[in-house]
Image (tube, rainbow, N blue to C red; front, side, top):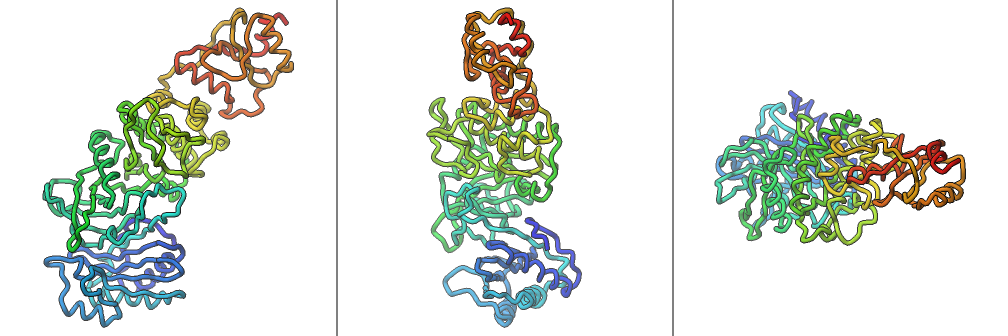
Length: 514
């Protein structure tokens, strides 16, 4: 059984067929800790859910009246049937579901039998074809590739399916559905809008106990609300659950059918066409450009925060650690995703560090997700043009050599930056010269000839370089097919208005009189 995250309509027409299918799902659920499975029917809300908490155990829950209101409340007869089936009733004075726990090794047939009896007998659902099944998993706090700033599985953040969350100011009401995951922000649920301003019925609710990240998400969500490459935020509000004195900070967002780009590429590991990848990354860059122009940086443009729509459009979906800087240095690098951090990150996170993340994203798309952390060496084998490889290499290289911000990278993707053109060189006198590639003569001799002509030799390309001599034997470590590091540096200088002449070895020999 393949564990496929998301909401799936149940296609079984008989309870016998559903029981067999559920056994296979429960077996897959136990293959990995922190997976969950929800079998749900709405109107009225009735559900059974399972979770693999660890150690091979299985935890089951059935909805209780603690999470239901109005016409959805279950009758006393239904509650008696649940208890008679073996469900442990909720503790007095504490909001919780009916529970049941199976210790390892789990008898999956017994667990499936209990679920079927609950749905068919206690809830009196006529056919399993009326159900929907949600498969998912909670991220663990120890995952080095997750941006974790708080414990994401606090009981206060575990909302029951069917619970109604409301905004007292706008009058909006949202019915909680299946959980979609948990991470640094808190917990995320699929919800349906049942009252209030007209928005899509299916949307996402993010809840947290920590107000700082909530304020940032709400602020940047409103700031970028007109950007098509940003997940739309419908509203933000604080809400106190019934029986609690602790507020939850809520965001209601657009539902991304394709999930995040990491899970999307795991399911569909095909390289994107270069034209498609460039187009989508350019859309992302236009939104990031607005951040950079406003003196802000994102700091977390990682695969879990780039989402995919049903039309294969990419959108940025998390601004929880985005921040405005107070100087040209960027912001203090005190919060970021360590699994995707740029190399040699110092005290400050600048727009060039966001560029590093975008370069990784472009490489991921072009490789079809073959690597979620592509190295500069792996970029060499990407199925794309040398120009695209050169752009990615520059994004992933040393910070001083990267594109300075989203605007400069966007110009490169859209071919709006100057590229090196032929410049006629008649003399090396007074010129600063750099050598690259294999030459017929040893470098020491080549440097001596330059100095004899009144030139100055440099070891690397910089803002003062005038001429780069390319050996006719080629470079021993080509990176972007036609260009090594020094020629990529020439591209960088040309994009910034500094013109450098590229001279082949044969022409160099004529200039030095050989």
